[in-house]
Image (cartoon, rainbow, N blue to C red; front, side, top):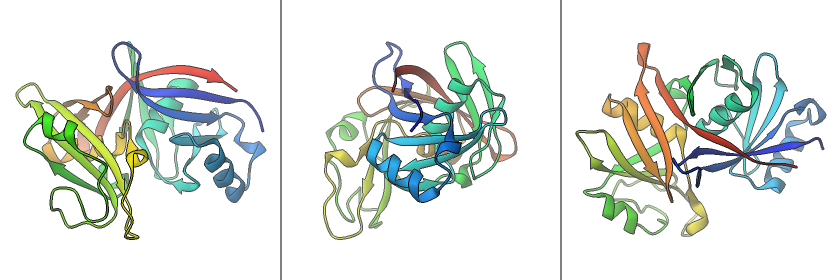
Length: 230
């Protein structure tokens, strides 16, 4: 196994929090998808990216052993690390730009995985949520998949408080480990639904900035920092 860059993506203004990402720059050393899935499961980062072509940004993304066509924080993190104008996950070409401390990607909402967006009445209600089990989550009726709980902190300013949970459909309740610290794909979906720029604080204090783009695209940006190289 080659070196792994471990990043924190969507950090807060003080550099804390963010979602962990492992990036294996020499993905060719692990060409088999089953091998990649097993390695990603063993590393146990929120997601792991295998870089198949560092010049064109061709990437392969895995979460807990599952291959993903698109995911927000892995693409922001990989774009920051590789310093490219585009990255190319299985879903399609993603444009990248750097703006000061923020790295931005432009993507299509339809690439995001199925997510139930549930609005709560206040940020305090979102903060008080426990990890939901089967069918829980504000009476939305969904039994599994992502639940993105959100509320306005300041609607006029576009400030949002959010948390994201993975709900299991096998009859067992989720636990605290089901919470995702910073979910770019869900932020992309919320921005598309509301049709406006957002400043989202998710999880313990991660920050995601979004804005609607042309032709139904959404731009999402955040801070990235290198945690370690293994």
